[in-house]
Image (tube, rainbow over the protein chains, first blue to last red):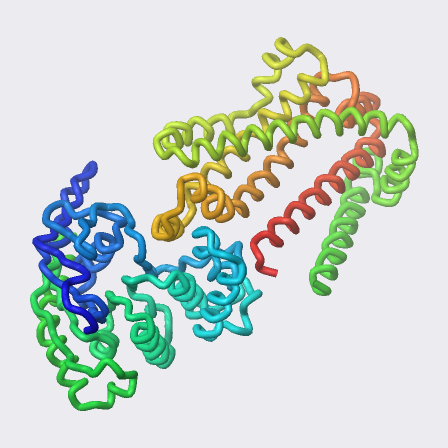
Length: 270
Length: 245
């Protein structure tokens, strides 16, 4: 944690989706209270459908809280995307009509960056994400994992202060996930960005994070925040540390009951 | 690519054999054999009257295509960007697309008379609906994650349409244009078949009147060839734009 003072502050943040037609009102999230400091790596784990992605939408400014106060850098978040926020979505968001290089350059071009600057940043990001031989390829010619790396690169070149990741490695195999985790840690250390990662994988959360927020079944609340105590300079080899097992074990002990509840919930509600 | 060329050769040979067989079974006075028909088609291609008819059809088809594409794309874009308008228009467009347009031809003739405009109008009402429907749906089908990405990049509404929505929708819009093109040709020819004074459709009708089987089949074959070539070209363009090859 590089600086004091919360980068993100959520106070009793609640999201309720109003009733539409036959669909009843859905209390998706909250109340959620959390402070995340600048430069922290914070992960969110929770059972399916607990409102993790809803939380991310609020943090990104894509959606506003129904109740409560959400603030980024002291400024209120109210459904408008603030500057300096980058999101990598769970779904493939690469642009099929642009080459890998043009995909990565897209945001910089729209921002009006100079040619030389774009060239430098994009070349670096393409290399960094291991896409060097594929700069001229189109997304349709790449695997799902590579396309996701294109999306990560497109977000990273904009050097966001806050990086929001919604299950970014969901489409990758286990080995690639570990290596991408290392990349992510490196980026996090080098840029000093605050990272909020949403994941299903307890291992991934335990390996990458400073702190992990465990969410309850819907409506999602933080039932526990687990501190890992890892040094800032860490990588995937931490999975062989005996404390790693303790962390994942703790996460699972909190999450087990909630996951059963989430499953039972969806079985009885249908 | 090599295997595709082989496929096409096999397909053409298969069609020709089936045609020859059919001609043999039902008689040359009902279905003329391929060789006779192809020779007649070559003769037609060398005659002045064929090209006069072709020019007449071509002009009507060209104008109808331009109007159908421009109108269909602009209308479809407008409806695709406005969810409510799109919801209202969707069933109406679908109905217009599916009704037999021939029932409207008497009205078109009353409005435009026995003229080029009538042929154009009839071609347009065939082509404009599928193009509008495809364009509208293409925009509505743009992945939500692309819209979200545009918002995350803080793009203006104009930039969102120009740099994300339109390019994402383009392949599907082109499919609509390809289908619209085919039915516009169909509409133009039907108009000529029913009431006109020139054009390939008119020539077909005249050949039918005098039971000139060879002429009927030769003209049909030339039309088929033209439609297939245009379709293949548009298909090629579609594939190129999708960057799959």
